[in-house]
Structure formats: structure tokens, C-alpha cells
Image (cartoon, rainbow, N blue to C red; front, side):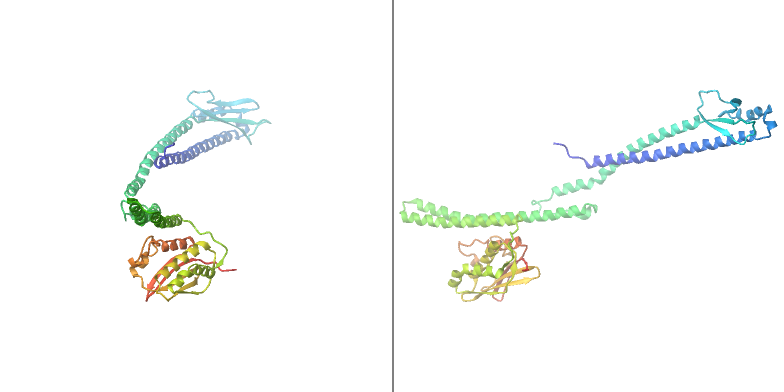
Length: 442
């Protein structure tokens, strides 16, 4: 397993590489410009000396052949030891000076042909040499100086860059210590984004949001575990107690059969609770509903009402449906949600009253509303109705057939359809509703 890469080492390394490349380019440009300046200077000096020799040779012909021409040239070139000259005409050397090799000198020779020089059908050639030893030494010293500047500059930037990066990354270490001090063990503790650089603010905000969701999920899990333990404890205790009573003394076959039937009912209740818990767990993991082609929601209401017809007759209730809408839904899930709402309405409605079911289309959602007349629900209980195992009142605890997950399942089905839930109760009318994303028929 390879070790984690260090941001500090990586940034310091790249600072050094960037500085090395940048200084190398700058120093190379400086060296080239200096060498070019020396070359321009040497060329200018060469042209000046060529013009001087040509001026002497352009004097009248009878003077050119005079013996004092070498003396005139000696007067200049012998006093300038850094300039060498070879003057020839027709293959014959007319004059030369400073042409012997010397260890302390480095010559740059440039041949040229002199024009407009009076001569008898012959061409005059001039080879002029300039001592560039001093320029070469200056360039060499400049080159080594620049190389040293590049190396030392890169090392200095790498060192200071490492210190600056370490200082710049210090808030990350502080952030790591602060994040380690958060979590479920420290509820409501959040990171203060204002204490950090603006580049870290989005990450800190996202972390706080994740922490908020994790803390909420942790609280939900704790409450859920407590509720599950409470709900499962009662039927299990009933089954154990009944079995102990039946085993305490000899029983008839009929008595044992009644005990088994009672235990079977408790087992079915446990099975229903576990099935509902598994469904809610699947919903919490982000499951979405499988959509069918658009169907009539009024048809689904009629099917659910028909399923509860016996209960409605027993309670002396009637169902009145208002409106219709088409939506792409998971038919089985929506029917289950409607069945839960209608079952609640039947349990708590005033006998002989009417249960209203309304299909209300609002923009991109269809609301399925179920209203019943009866005792009002306390306002402080309304926000909690869709929580798991929540019961608003003791009178609403119901029998062993109801375990407080019906409305939580309705909320889960609404979320799986991209919808919401609603609960209100006033003036003796209680309305429980949920929505699904609407799909209008073509």
C-alpha cells in the first residue's frame, strides 16, 4: 500500500521546479543578450578599423607605394596590441602586425575585400583580427554567475516555499482537529466557516450539512431502535407469558390450541412490524417508486373503498369522492397509502358521518386528501403524525392490530413519488393528505 502524498512536499517541489525553469529562461536571455552585445561591439570595432585602413589605401597612387605606408600602419596597430592585421594584394603581403599566436590572447579573424582601392588590376584583401579574450572571460564569469543564481534561487524559493506552504496549510490541521471533535457525541457542534479562508468555506459548509444530516439520522436511529424495542417487547412478552402459563400445568388439547392461535396472532403482528420496518428502511435508502403509464387516481380510490367496504358498513360510514386526475404512479404503493389513510379515517370518524376523499391537482402535483369528522387532533401533535410509532393520544393507540407505522408508510410512499405530506385538524374535521408528481394525459 503506497503512502499518502504530501501536499506540502508537492507544492514545494513544484515551486522549486517553476523557479528553476523561470530563472533558467531569464538567465539564458541575459546571457544571450550580453553575448550579442559583445558581438555588436566587436563588429563595430572591426568596421571602424577596416575603414581606417581603407582610408590610407585610397590616398593618391604615388603615395600608396611609398615606403612610409607601413610606418603609418605601425603607428596605429603596434600601439593596439589587441588588433591584428594582414594586408595582401595579388598574393603578396603588403603589411602584417600582431599575427604571432600569443597564449594570453584569443583572436577573432574576419577577412574582407577592400573596394575602390587604386591598384593595377589587382584586388586588395584585408584580414583583421580582434582580441576577444576579455569578452570571453566576462561571458564565462557571467555564465557561471547565472548558473549559481539559478541554483541558489531555486533552493531559496524551495525552502521559503516549503515554509510558506506549511504556514498556509496550518488551518487544515486546525480544521482536522476541529472535525475530530464533532459527531454524535457532540450534538449541535458545528464548524465556524468565518474563521477560515474563503477557499475553505464551501467545503466547511458542506461538512456542516453532512454533519447535520448524520446527526439527524443518528437521532432517528436511536429513536427508531427505542420504538422498535418497545413495540416488539409487548407481543414477545405476551407470547412468553402465555407459553409459561400453558406449560405450568397440564392442559387440554383445546386449551393448547387456543394458546397456539393466540401466539400465532402475536407472531403475525411481529411479522407485520418487521415487514413495515423493512419497507421504511428501503425508503430511507432513497428508493424511488416504479412508475406505470398514467392511470386514473379515482379508479384507485374506488378500488381501495371497495376493499374497506365491510369496515365502512360496520361503522355506518360513507365515502364521497371529489375530482379526478391522472398520474404515473406505482399503483400498489399508492393504493397502500390510500388504504392506510382510509383505515385511519374509519377508526376515528364519527359513526354515521361521511369520509371525504378529494383529488386536487396543483401545478405539478396531485394531492390525495382524506377527511373525516371526529375528535380533533391537538395542534402540537400534528407535526409528529408521520413519525414512526407515534400516537397522538392514548385513545388513538388502537388495538394490537395497529402499531403506529401507517402514516410513516404514507410519508415514505409520498417521498418515493417525489411528493409531500400534510396534516391538519380543526373544527372537528381532520385532513390527512399526500401528493405525487402529476402526469397529465396526452
